[in-house]
Length: 124
Length: 154
Image (cartoon, each protein chain N blue to C red):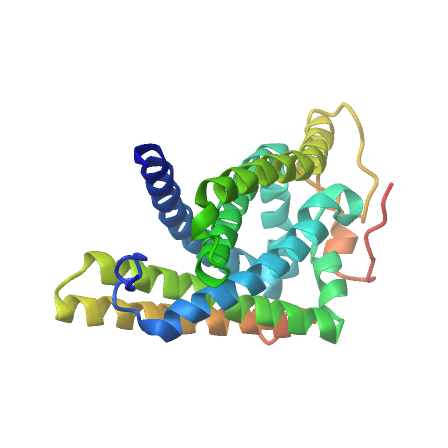
């Protein structure tokens, strides 16, 4: 079975393998995420600044959320790259789109990290 | 064989569509959560997104996440443990698991949604963390940030 048969374009073995590893991590992280914030949230799911900040005071939660952010963004970006490789044949366009995806991913990584680490102001 | 090809094909198309939808959602999610730098704005946004209507839509999000996750598990098993031999059994086994998990997760999510529906229609009053919750006026002194309160269940 080649990568193209798997619908993975020419992403290569590294991306193919990492998409599965990050997927497995996200499975666990999302179970935790839904458990804490959707299934059994405090106060009938009334999510407020105070409740979120109280959770983010714990270094372990910050670590989990940062890991969740990095892995989620990588998995998402890599997924879009795999789709691009399947449908965009022209090399120039491919590189331009993948480059734009990288830039967007890094921007979202910075924005998300600043939120988790309380670096964007507020009362953290 | 024709039947197996059809289910596999549909599963694959839905996998891509749900994956792209989740990427879009992740981007929106990161932007919304970045409101945490402004407590009043964050609470205002969450009161809007915490309405019962959005909570029902969140069940749809749960469905999309669950589908993508379980099809991902299927691919993982096929690729790493040679599940291709039992392709159909694996597919329907995970589909059954998906229905069970969807029902199990929807129950608490729907009960929260129905609770806030009653709060929004004025049927019941919410006594929570002091913010008033979805559809209720903000408690100004708390929003201004005098004390740190942790949410308590009623």
